[in-house]
Length: 246
Image 1 (tube, rainbow, N blue to C red):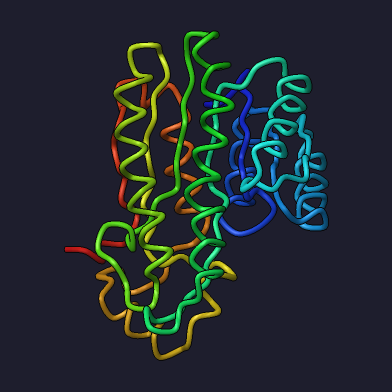
Image 2 (cartoon, rainbow, N blue to C red):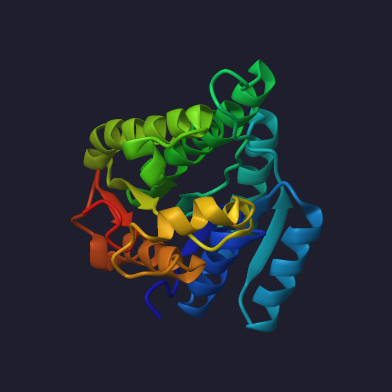
């Protein structure tokens, strides 16, 4: 029960990695607030959490809109009393080669994956500072570290997330708030499974462990960074990619 007595907000908690993290955190004793764009997905995970006996809530949230984030944060604090953990996990893809990527596709990904992380952290961090402690976990990506064909917008946002993580670690660390990032490799989520089979196999061939990651692999990394076991970890980018970059 490594998160006993702690409260967590997980954006994008209605599916994939976010869902796995919500369930993992609940099993470790945390109160969990799911913030997700999809009402249907969010309510489904909320039901799973309640069946586990967890204290949990769902707030339909568009992280690309500050007013939506602020409503979610106010509701979460009212529900939990305090927020100890923020997992900025929400993200989308709109893949296209540079020559074919539309301005709309660029802005859609920037608004959710980069601006959304800024909005959530800007809103929740002062609450953590007031409490004198907190853990903020940002979801980066191997793509933000090394780039990827057809993902100009996505790579830009994830590289930006890494930059914000290191900046906030310096700004908030002396106030008791740790900020770290997890950089997943290719994880078996609906987002990744939309990729062509040939592309997936090519990526898989580069992984020494010879498998795609599972959402639970990332949830376990989130758990470590959320728990007191990582109390001296700040500004780190934890790669979880099966050794793909070796």
